[in-house]
Length: 422
Ligand code: TNX
Image (cartoon, rainbow, N blue to C red; front, side):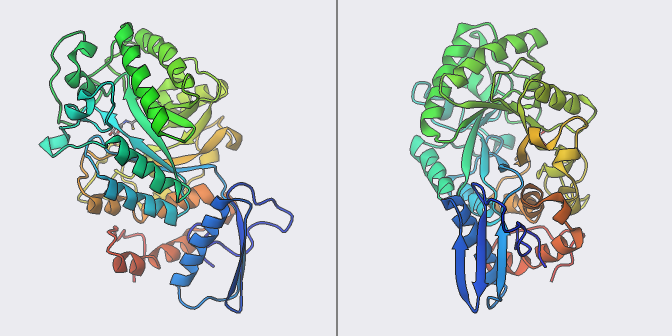
């Protein structure tokens, strides 16, 4: 009687249905457990469900057959505005894994900080990594740190999708290497404005720099995807933006990776296999860009800000977070269908969905968990469970049953007024 991602309804799949790359069957009879899956991922998810069932007390007889609705089931962590160490990132991965999410998008660079050591451009991390929003301590991942995150994630069926944001959101890189800013000194930035910095779309150095960075990043990243940002490039002219997109895309494909970018990249011609991340729910432009992406044959990852931006406040009483996209309470994150969100964008163009956590106002793991939980459970349900089996009252009850486990494990969460907490 509980929903799929927390504990699946028995036999969601018909007997003849294929399990696919992440599906599984789980049967419990008289305390004996039987798991069937075609892949390690499927087995891992069966174990997650078994864990959820065991947490509810003695194991009752049950037969479950389940597989996810969407292939890309993610969260994004902004480690640029505030830095989070390997331990914190691994805790976030634990939460993703518990709810059967499989993508961790790491926003590794922004105006306020550069968070990954790059051998050929050492000042990026050493200098550009020092800062964070509000003058808080910075930090960066060594190559070993990053590998440890990727490994920890892979053991939990989570793919890391790294993002180097460009051509905007680059002040930390410009401050580290003024030659990227045409030799003008660039000051480190610790505020929370966006859209003021830009790489030079016509300088060969820009592409030598990005070529080096993307090559090192690709070598450290086993997953198929490199995210190049592309959002809010308000100080790059539209022509320069197109010139930039034309030159950055081959740098990604040269690494044998697929390009991912925020919705703005759909204003440029995109190469085959590109993935576009829809986000901006203010006005019509996001919808237009999503349709433009699909018209080019790109696939979409849906991150509607008014549904799944987990840095938005739940309600006016939430101490942390922002509210530019409105308040996002648990039911807002739960009650939507990615396949009907944008007119003209159908299910087959949608790779999946992802919940970004921007960290302008978030400084600690406790802050992150407060924003992630319980909304991450809703995101996971949207990503996993077919629309016709989604049910708010059932979900609400299942979420409230998580609270004792979070408390026992010292995991922070928000006691949203929409849920009857124990
Ligand atoms: C918009 S979403 C941004 C980020 C901010 C976020 C804050 C997107 C692609 N860009 O730069 O951190 O809003 O909610």
